[in-house]
Image 1 (cartoon, one colour):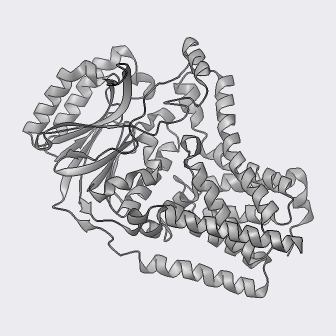
Image 2 (tube, one colour):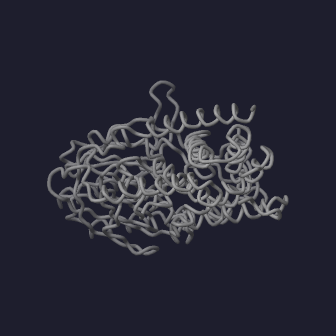
Length: 509
Protein backbone atom coordinates (compact mmCIF):
# COMPACT_ATOMS: atom_id res chain seq x y z
CA UNK A 1 0.00 0.00 0.00
CA UNK A 2 1.45 3.35 -1.02
CA UNK A 3 0.75 6.83 0.24
CA UNK A 4 -2.06 8.51 -1.75
CA UNK A 5 -0.77 11.03 -4.25
CA UNK A 6 -2.59 14.01 -2.75
CA UNK A 7 -0.70 13.57 0.53
CA UNK A 8 2.56 14.18 -1.29
CA UNK A 9 1.44 17.67 -2.19
CA UNK A 10 3.41 20.25 -0.27
CA UNK A 11 0.71 21.84 1.86
CA UNK A 12 -1.54 18.79 2.25
CA UNK A 13 1.19 16.60 3.71
CA UNK A 14 2.43 19.36 6.01
CA UNK A 15 -1.13 20.02 7.16
CA UNK A 16 -1.70 16.35 7.95
CA UNK A 17 1.59 16.28 9.90
CA UNK A 18 0.57 19.37 11.91
CA UNK A 19 -2.88 17.92 12.67
CA UNK A 20 -1.31 14.62 13.74
CA UNK A 21 0.99 16.57 16.06
CA UNK A 22 -1.97 18.40 17.57
CA UNK A 23 -3.77 15.10 18.09
CA UNK A 24 -0.72 13.85 19.96
CA UNK A 25 -1.10 16.82 22.34
CA UNK A 26 -4.61 15.55 23.18
CA UNK A 27 -3.18 12.26 24.44
CA UNK A 28 -1.76 14.05 27.48
CA UNK A 29 -3.65 15.33 30.50
CA UNK A 30 -6.26 16.59 31.04
CA UNK A 31 -8.01 14.81 28.16
CA UNK A 32 -5.75 11.79 28.31
CA UNK A 33 -6.89 10.31 24.99
CA UNK A 34 -3.98 7.88 25.22
CA UNK A 35 -4.67 5.89 21.97
CA UNK A 36 -3.74 9.07 20.09
CA UNK A 37 -0.30 8.73 21.64
CA UNK A 38 0.07 5.51 19.65
CA UNK A 39 -1.65 6.58 16.44
CA UNK A 40 -0.25 10.10 15.95
CA UNK A 41 3.42 8.97 15.71
CA UNK A 42 2.30 6.23 13.31
CA UNK A 43 0.82 8.90 11.03
CA UNK A 44 4.15 10.72 10.86
CA UNK A 45 6.05 7.48 10.20
CA UNK A 46 3.57 6.82 7.38
CA UNK A 47 4.06 10.33 5.96
CA UNK A 48 7.82 9.84 5.97
CA UNK A 49 7.51 6.87 3.65
CA UNK A 50 9.22 7.62 0.29
CA UNK A 51 9.90 11.24 1.36
CA UNK A 52 13.15 12.95 0.40
CA UNK A 53 15.36 14.10 3.31
CA UNK A 54 14.24 17.69 2.82
CA UNK A 55 10.56 16.76 2.66
CA UNK A 56 10.86 14.47 5.68
CA UNK A 57 12.45 17.32 7.63
CA UNK A 58 9.54 19.63 6.78
CA UNK A 59 6.99 17.00 7.82
CA UNK A 60 8.81 16.38 11.10
CA UNK A 61 8.94 20.12 11.81
CA UNK A 62 5.20 20.60 11.35
CA UNK A 63 4.38 17.54 13.43
CA UNK A 64 6.23 18.88 16.47
CA UNK A 65 5.04 22.42 15.79
CA UNK A 66 1.49 21.10 16.01
CA UNK A 67 2.19 19.26 19.27
CA UNK A 68 3.85 22.16 21.05
CA UNK A 69 1.72 24.88 19.50
CA UNK A 70 -1.40 23.29 21.00
CA UNK A 71 0.22 21.58 23.98
CA UNK A 72 2.02 24.64 25.39
CA UNK A 73 -0.40 27.43 24.46
CA UNK A 74 -0.46 28.32 28.16
CA UNK A 75 2.95 29.99 27.87
CA UNK A 76 1.03 32.97 26.53
CA UNK A 77 -0.66 33.35 29.91
CA UNK A 78 2.65 33.31 31.80
CA UNK A 79 4.52 35.64 29.46
CA UNK A 80 1.83 38.12 28.40
CA UNK A 81 -1.13 38.09 30.76
CA UNK A 82 0.82 37.62 33.99
CA UNK A 83 4.37 38.52 32.98
CA UNK A 84 3.22 41.69 31.24
CA UNK A 85 5.34 41.26 28.12
CA UNK A 86 4.03 42.99 24.99
CA UNK A 87 2.37 40.91 22.30
CA UNK A 88 5.28 41.21 19.89
CA UNK A 89 7.77 39.85 22.41
CA UNK A 90 5.38 37.12 23.54
CA UNK A 91 4.89 36.07 19.93
CA UNK A 92 8.62 35.93 19.30
CA UNK A 93 9.30 33.86 22.42
CA UNK A 94 6.49 31.39 21.77
CA UNK A 95 7.33 31.10 18.07
CA UNK A 96 10.96 30.58 19.06
CA UNK A 97 10.06 27.72 21.37
CA UNK A 98 7.85 26.07 18.73
CA UNK A 99 10.59 26.50 16.12
CA UNK A 100 13.17 24.91 18.42
CA UNK A 101 10.86 22.00 19.21
CA UNK A 102 10.04 21.61 15.51
CA UNK A 103 13.73 21.56 14.61
CA UNK A 104 14.26 18.40 16.65
CA UNK A 105 11.83 16.43 14.52
CA UNK A 106 13.06 18.15 11.38
CA UNK A 107 16.47 16.67 12.18
CA UNK A 108 14.87 13.32 12.92
CA UNK A 109 12.94 13.30 9.63
CA UNK A 110 16.03 14.21 7.64
CA UNK A 111 18.06 11.43 9.31
CA UNK A 112 15.30 8.86 8.74
CA UNK A 113 15.08 9.65 5.02
CA UNK A 114 18.83 9.98 4.57
CA UNK A 115 20.11 6.92 6.38
CA UNK A 116 17.43 4.29 6.98
CA UNK A 117 16.24 1.62 4.54
CA UNK A 118 13.49 2.83 2.24
CA UNK A 119 10.88 0.49 3.68
CA UNK A 120 10.45 -2.66 5.72
CA UNK A 121 10.43 -3.78 9.34
CA UNK A 122 14.01 -2.62 9.88
CA UNK A 123 12.85 0.92 9.15
CA UNK A 124 9.50 0.89 10.93
CA UNK A 125 10.24 -1.35 13.95
CA UNK A 126 13.95 -0.73 14.54
CA UNK A 127 15.40 2.42 13.03
CA UNK A 128 12.65 5.00 13.46
CA UNK A 129 11.68 4.09 17.07
CA UNK A 130 15.35 4.12 18.12
CA UNK A 131 16.18 7.42 16.41
CA UNK A 132 12.99 9.07 17.68
CA UNK A 133 13.79 8.06 21.24
CA UNK A 134 17.32 9.49 20.97
CA UNK A 135 15.96 12.81 19.72
CA UNK A 136 13.41 12.93 22.55
CA UNK A 137 16.09 12.15 25.11
CA UNK A 138 18.37 14.80 23.57
CA UNK A 139 15.54 17.33 23.79
CA UNK A 140 15.20 16.55 27.48
CA UNK A 141 18.62 17.95 28.39
CA UNK A 142 20.05 20.02 25.51
CA UNK A 143 19.95 23.79 26.16
CA UNK A 144 18.78 23.10 29.76
CA UNK A 145 16.21 20.65 28.36
CA UNK A 146 12.48 20.76 27.74
CA UNK A 147 11.05 17.31 28.29
CA UNK A 148 7.42 18.44 28.40
CA UNK A 149 5.03 16.37 26.25
CA UNK A 150 7.43 13.45 25.90
CA UNK A 151 5.65 10.39 24.55
CA UNK A 152 5.91 8.29 27.71
CA UNK A 153 3.74 10.70 29.70
CA UNK A 154 0.79 10.03 27.38
CA UNK A 155 0.59 6.50 28.83
CA UNK A 156 0.91 7.38 32.53
CA UNK A 157 -2.47 5.91 33.50
CA UNK A 158 -2.48 3.01 31.03
CA UNK A 159 -1.25 -0.58 30.98
CA UNK A 160 1.99 0.66 29.40
CA UNK A 161 2.43 3.13 32.26
CA UNK A 162 2.59 0.23 34.69
CA UNK A 163 6.04 -0.52 33.30
CA UNK A 164 7.41 2.80 34.58
CA UNK A 165 9.18 1.19 37.59
CA UNK A 166 10.99 -1.12 35.14
CA UNK A 167 11.89 1.03 32.13
CA UNK A 168 11.06 4.60 33.13
CA UNK A 169 9.36 7.29 31.10
CA UNK A 170 11.78 7.03 28.16
CA UNK A 171 11.35 3.28 28.09
CA UNK A 172 7.58 3.70 27.90
CA UNK A 173 8.07 6.23 25.11
CA UNK A 174 10.13 3.65 23.23
CA UNK A 175 7.37 1.05 23.62
CA UNK A 176 4.88 3.61 22.27
CA UNK A 177 7.09 4.05 19.22
CA UNK A 178 7.39 0.31 18.71
CA UNK A 179 3.61 0.01 18.70
CA UNK A 180 3.35 2.98 16.31
CA UNK A 181 5.88 1.28 14.05
CA UNK A 182 3.89 -1.94 14.29
CA UNK A 183 0.77 -0.09 13.12
CA UNK A 184 2.63 1.18 10.06
CA UNK A 185 4.02 -2.30 9.41
CA UNK A 186 0.51 -3.76 9.50
CA UNK A 187 -0.49 -1.14 6.94
CA UNK A 188 2.50 -1.20 4.59
CA UNK A 189 4.47 -4.36 5.34
CA UNK A 190 4.69 -7.77 3.76
CA UNK A 191 2.85 -10.71 5.29
CA UNK A 192 5.87 -11.88 7.33
CA UNK A 193 6.52 -8.36 8.59
CA UNK A 194 2.92 -8.03 9.69
CA UNK A 195 3.20 -11.23 11.70
CA UNK A 196 6.37 -9.93 13.35
CA UNK A 197 4.64 -6.66 14.25
CA UNK A 198 1.71 -8.51 15.83
CA UNK A 199 4.05 -10.70 17.86
CA UNK A 200 5.97 -7.59 18.96
CA UNK A 201 2.82 -5.93 20.34
CA UNK A 202 1.99 -9.14 22.23
CA UNK A 203 5.52 -9.28 23.64
CA UNK A 204 5.05 -5.73 24.94
CA UNK A 205 1.58 -6.36 26.35
CA UNK A 206 2.27 -9.58 28.26
CA UNK A 207 4.91 -8.25 30.72
CA UNK A 208 3.02 -4.97 31.08
CA UNK A 209 0.00 -6.88 32.36
CA UNK A 210 1.96 -9.51 34.27
CA UNK A 211 4.10 -7.02 36.22
CA UNK A 212 1.44 -4.44 37.05
CA UNK A 213 0.85 -5.71 40.62
CA UNK A 214 4.49 -6.27 41.55
CA UNK A 215 5.69 -4.21 44.54
CA UNK A 216 9.12 -3.00 43.56
CA UNK A 217 9.80 -1.17 46.83
CA UNK A 218 9.01 -1.98 50.46
CA UNK A 219 7.30 -0.01 53.24
CA UNK A 220 9.64 1.98 55.45
CA UNK A 221 8.16 2.47 58.91
CA UNK A 222 4.57 3.35 59.63
CA UNK A 223 2.34 5.54 57.45
CA UNK A 224 2.48 9.26 58.21
CA UNK A 225 -0.13 11.99 58.01
CA UNK A 226 0.53 14.95 55.73
CA UNK A 227 -1.16 18.28 55.10
CA UNK A 228 -0.76 20.67 52.20
CA UNK A 229 -1.41 24.36 52.78
CA UNK A 230 -2.81 25.72 49.52
CA UNK A 231 -2.99 29.50 49.66
CA UNK A 232 -4.75 29.88 46.28
CA UNK A 233 -3.52 33.43 45.77
CA UNK A 234 -4.01 34.52 42.13
CA UNK A 235 -0.71 35.25 40.42
CA UNK A 236 -1.73 38.81 39.53
CA UNK A 237 -2.38 39.47 43.23
CA UNK A 238 0.48 37.53 44.74
CA UNK A 239 3.24 40.09 44.16
CA UNK A 240 1.37 43.27 45.10
CA UNK A 241 3.22 44.77 48.09
CA UNK A 242 0.02 45.76 49.84
CA UNK A 243 -1.10 42.13 49.96
CA UNK A 244 1.98 40.80 51.75
CA UNK A 245 0.67 41.05 55.32
CA UNK A 246 -2.60 39.41 54.31
CA UNK A 247 -0.65 36.57 52.66
CA UNK A 248 1.43 36.01 55.81
CA UNK A 249 -1.67 35.82 57.97
CA UNK A 250 -3.37 33.46 55.53
CA UNK A 251 -0.50 30.99 55.67
CA UNK A 252 -0.25 31.31 59.44
CA UNK A 253 -3.97 30.57 59.87
CA UNK A 254 -4.01 27.68 57.40
CA UNK A 255 -0.93 26.17 59.02
CA UNK A 256 -2.62 26.28 62.41
CA UNK A 257 -5.53 24.42 60.85
CA UNK A 258 -3.03 21.78 59.61
CA UNK A 259 -1.41 21.28 63.03
CA UNK A 260 -1.20 17.66 64.07
CA UNK A 261 -0.26 16.34 60.65
CA UNK A 262 3.20 14.83 60.88
CA UNK A 263 4.32 16.85 57.87
CA UNK A 264 2.95 20.19 56.65
CA UNK A 265 3.93 21.36 53.16
CA UNK A 266 3.66 24.84 51.65
CA UNK A 267 3.80 25.49 47.87
CA UNK A 268 6.53 27.18 45.87
CA UNK A 269 7.49 30.71 46.98
CA UNK A 270 4.52 30.74 49.34
CA UNK A 271 5.68 34.04 50.83
CA UNK A 272 6.07 36.55 47.94
CA UNK A 273 9.29 37.95 49.36
CA UNK A 274 12.72 36.78 50.46
CA UNK A 275 12.38 34.72 53.61
CA UNK A 276 15.41 36.57 54.96
CA UNK A 277 13.01 39.45 55.60
CA UNK A 278 10.60 37.31 57.63
CA UNK A 279 12.68 35.19 59.97
CA UNK A 280 10.61 36.23 62.99
CA UNK A 281 7.37 35.21 61.29
CA UNK A 282 8.76 31.86 60.17
CA UNK A 283 10.19 31.23 63.63
CA UNK A 284 6.76 31.73 65.18
CA UNK A 285 5.07 29.47 62.63
CA UNK A 286 7.69 26.77 63.18
CA UNK A 287 7.46 26.89 66.97
CA UNK A 288 3.67 26.54 66.89
CA UNK A 289 3.83 23.66 64.41
CA UNK A 290 6.58 21.90 66.31
CA UNK A 291 4.63 22.16 69.56
CA UNK A 292 1.74 20.40 67.75
CA UNK A 293 4.06 17.62 66.58
CA UNK A 294 4.36 18.82 62.98
CA UNK A 295 7.40 19.31 60.76
CA UNK A 296 7.40 21.91 58.00
CA UNK A 297 8.54 21.81 54.38
CA UNK A 298 7.96 24.97 52.40
CA UNK A 299 8.81 26.60 49.11
CA UNK A 300 10.60 29.90 49.62
CA UNK A 301 12.85 32.43 47.94
CA UNK A 302 16.03 33.17 49.82
CA UNK A 303 19.13 35.30 49.64
CA UNK A 304 22.58 33.95 50.36
CA UNK A 305 26.13 35.23 50.09
CA UNK A 306 28.54 33.40 47.84
CA UNK A 307 31.43 32.37 50.13
CA UNK A 308 33.97 32.68 47.32
CA UNK A 309 32.99 35.99 45.73
CA UNK A 310 31.00 37.66 48.50
CA UNK A 311 28.22 38.45 46.00
CA UNK A 312 24.57 38.06 46.88
CA UNK A 313 22.81 35.10 45.31
CA UNK A 314 19.10 34.36 45.09
CA UNK A 315 17.59 30.89 45.14
CA UNK A 316 14.18 29.37 44.61
CA UNK A 317 14.33 26.84 47.42
CA UNK A 318 12.60 24.24 49.52
CA UNK A 319 13.18 24.58 53.25
CA UNK A 320 12.66 21.91 55.89
CA UNK A 321 12.19 22.71 59.57
CA UNK A 322 11.82 19.94 62.11
CA UNK A 323 13.00 19.69 65.70
CA UNK A 324 13.87 16.00 65.35
CA UNK A 325 15.98 16.77 62.26
CA UNK A 326 18.05 19.22 64.28
CA UNK A 327 17.39 22.46 62.49
CA UNK A 328 16.81 23.82 59.02
CA UNK A 329 17.64 22.20 55.69
CA UNK A 330 17.70 23.70 52.22
CA UNK A 331 17.22 22.44 48.69
CA UNK A 332 17.99 25.02 45.98
CA UNK A 333 16.36 24.68 42.60
CA UNK A 334 18.76 23.55 39.90
CA UNK A 335 16.65 23.43 36.73
CA UNK A 336 15.25 26.90 36.12
CA UNK A 337 12.18 27.34 33.91
CA UNK A 338 12.79 28.93 30.49
CA UNK A 339 10.82 32.13 29.83
CA UNK A 340 9.71 32.54 33.46
CA UNK A 341 12.67 32.15 35.84
CA UNK A 342 15.19 32.95 33.16
CA UNK A 343 14.97 34.02 29.56
CA UNK A 344 17.30 31.94 27.35
CA UNK A 345 18.88 34.90 25.57
CA UNK A 346 22.29 36.59 25.87
CA UNK A 347 22.98 38.73 28.94
CA UNK A 348 22.80 42.03 27.06
CA UNK A 349 19.23 41.17 25.98
CA UNK A 350 18.26 40.32 29.55
CA UNK A 351 19.71 43.63 30.73
CA UNK A 352 17.58 45.39 28.12
CA UNK A 353 14.48 43.53 29.32
CA UNK A 354 15.08 44.80 32.85
CA UNK A 355 15.59 48.36 31.63
CA UNK A 356 12.34 48.11 29.70
CA UNK A 357 10.52 46.84 32.82
CA UNK A 358 9.85 43.49 31.14
CA UNK A 359 9.98 40.16 32.99
CA UNK A 360 13.53 38.86 33.40
CA UNK A 361 13.88 36.87 36.60
CA UNK A 362 17.37 36.12 37.85
CA UNK A 363 17.66 33.11 40.14
CA UNK A 364 20.91 31.29 40.75
CA UNK A 365 21.11 27.56 40.12
CA UNK A 366 21.50 25.16 43.01
CA UNK A 367 23.91 22.26 42.86
CA UNK A 368 23.05 19.40 40.54
CA UNK A 369 23.05 16.82 43.33
CA UNK A 370 21.83 17.77 46.81
CA UNK A 371 21.08 15.50 49.77
CA UNK A 372 17.48 14.74 50.75
CA UNK A 373 15.81 16.99 53.30
CA UNK A 374 14.93 15.59 56.72
CA UNK A 375 11.53 16.17 58.30
CA UNK A 376 8.78 14.12 59.93
CA UNK A 377 11.25 11.31 60.43
CA UNK A 378 11.65 10.98 56.67
CA UNK A 379 14.34 11.65 54.12
CA UNK A 380 12.62 13.71 51.45
CA UNK A 381 13.71 14.22 47.87
CA UNK A 382 12.33 17.67 47.11
CA UNK A 383 12.14 19.63 43.89
CA UNK A 384 10.55 22.82 42.68
CA UNK A 385 7.93 23.26 39.98
CA UNK A 386 9.02 22.03 36.55
CA UNK A 387 12.03 20.16 37.98
CA UNK A 388 10.10 16.94 38.36
CA UNK A 389 10.13 16.80 34.57
CA UNK A 390 13.79 15.73 34.87
CA UNK A 391 13.29 12.17 36.02
CA UNK A 392 16.93 11.10 36.18
CA UNK A 393 17.81 13.84 38.67
CA UNK A 394 15.96 12.08 41.47
CA UNK A 395 17.78 8.77 41.02
CA UNK A 396 20.85 9.41 43.25
CA UNK A 397 18.64 10.50 46.16
CA UNK A 398 16.43 7.40 45.95
CA UNK A 399 19.08 5.28 47.64
CA UNK A 400 18.11 6.98 50.90
CA UNK A 401 14.93 9.03 50.27
CA UNK A 402 11.66 7.56 51.55
CA UNK A 403 9.26 10.00 49.85
CA UNK A 404 9.07 12.78 47.27
CA UNK A 405 7.83 16.36 47.54
CA UNK A 406 7.16 18.76 44.69
CA UNK A 407 6.32 22.37 45.48
CA UNK A 408 4.97 24.39 42.59
CA UNK A 409 3.10 27.52 41.57
CA UNK A 410 1.20 26.64 38.43
CA UNK A 411 -0.86 29.79 38.90
CA UNK A 412 1.60 31.26 36.38
CA UNK A 413 -0.45 29.48 33.74
CA UNK A 414 -3.92 30.52 34.88
CA UNK A 415 -6.86 28.15 34.44
CA UNK A 416 -5.09 26.19 31.70
CA UNK A 417 -4.13 22.60 30.99
CA UNK A 418 -0.57 23.15 32.22
CA UNK A 419 -1.40 22.14 35.81
CA UNK A 420 -2.84 18.80 34.70
CA UNK A 421 0.10 18.06 32.43
CA UNK A 422 2.36 18.83 35.39
CA UNK A 423 0.35 16.55 37.69
CA UNK A 424 0.75 13.77 35.13
CA UNK A 425 4.52 14.26 35.19
CA UNK A 426 4.48 14.00 38.99
CA UNK A 427 2.53 10.75 38.77
CA UNK A 428 5.18 9.34 36.43
CA UNK A 429 7.98 10.31 38.84
CA UNK A 430 6.22 8.52 41.71
CA UNK A 431 5.78 5.38 39.59
CA UNK A 432 9.40 5.36 38.46
CA UNK A 433 10.69 5.82 42.00
CA UNK A 434 8.24 3.51 43.77
CA UNK A 435 7.79 6.35 46.26
CA UNK A 436 4.79 8.40 47.37
CA UNK A 437 4.79 12.07 46.47
CA UNK A 438 3.24 15.15 48.05
CA UNK A 439 2.43 17.94 45.59
CA UNK A 440 1.89 21.38 47.08
CA UNK A 441 0.59 23.91 44.56
CA UNK A 442 -0.43 27.50 45.16
CA UNK A 443 -3.75 27.22 43.29
CA UNK A 444 -3.71 23.49 42.44
CA UNK A 445 -3.34 20.74 41.67
CA UNK A 446 -2.27 19.82 45.23
CA UNK A 447 -2.33 16.08 45.77
CA UNK A 448 -0.95 13.04 47.54
CA UNK A 449 0.21 10.43 45.02
CA UNK A 450 1.05 6.87 46.02
CA UNK A 451 3.99 4.77 44.84
CA UNK A 452 1.96 3.47 41.88
CA UNK A 453 1.22 6.96 40.62
CA UNK A 454 -2.39 6.89 41.81
CA UNK A 455 -3.90 10.06 43.24
CA UNK A 456 -4.90 9.27 46.82
CA UNK A 457 -6.03 12.73 47.92
CA UNK A 458 -6.59 15.84 45.83
CA UNK A 459 -7.40 19.38 46.92
CA UNK A 460 -10.09 21.54 45.29
CA UNK A 461 -8.51 24.02 42.91
CA UNK A 462 -8.37 27.81 43.13
CA UNK A 463 -9.56 27.96 46.76
CA UNK A 464 -7.61 28.38 49.98
CA UNK A 465 -7.59 24.93 51.52
CA UNK A 466 -5.80 22.57 53.86
CA UNK A 467 -5.60 19.16 52.25
CA UNK A 468 -5.02 16.27 54.64
CA UNK A 469 -3.91 12.80 53.66
CA UNK A 470 -1.81 9.83 54.59
CA UNK A 471 1.06 8.12 52.81
CA UNK A 472 3.30 5.11 53.29
CA UNK A 473 7.03 5.95 53.11
CA UNK A 474 8.99 3.38 51.14
CA UNK A 475 12.56 2.18 50.66
CA UNK A 476 14.41 0.11 48.09
CA UNK A 477 15.05 0.66 44.41
CA UNK A 478 12.85 -0.11 41.45
CA UNK A 479 14.69 -1.62 38.45
CA UNK A 480 14.55 1.77 36.75
CA UNK A 481 15.88 3.58 39.81
CA UNK A 482 18.81 1.14 39.93
CA UNK A 483 19.78 1.54 36.28
CA UNK A 484 18.40 4.88 35.12
CA UNK A 485 17.96 5.80 31.46
CA UNK A 486 21.27 4.53 30.14
CA UNK A 487 20.23 0.97 29.20
CA UNK A 488 17.38 2.15 26.98
CA UNK A 489 19.41 5.03 25.55
CA UNK A 490 22.37 2.77 24.74
CA UNK A 491 20.01 0.26 23.13
CA UNK A 492 18.47 3.01 21.01
CA UNK A 493 21.93 4.24 19.98
CA UNK A 494 23.07 0.75 18.93
CA UNK A 495 19.87 0.09 16.99
CA UNK A 496 20.04 3.50 15.31
CA UNK A 497 23.61 2.97 14.17
CA UNK A 498 22.96 -0.61 13.06
CA UNK A 499 19.86 0.25 11.04
CA UNK A 500 21.54 3.31 9.51
CA UNK A 501 24.59 1.23 8.54
CA UNK A 502 22.40 -1.42 6.94
CA UNK A 503 20.31 1.22 5.23
CA UNK A 504 23.34 2.92 3.68
CA UNK A 505 24.70 -0.39 2.42
CA UNK A 506 21.33 -1.35 0.96
CA UNK A 507 20.86 2.04 -0.67
CA UNK A 508 24.24 1.69 -2.43
CA UNK A 509 23.24 -1.61 -4.01
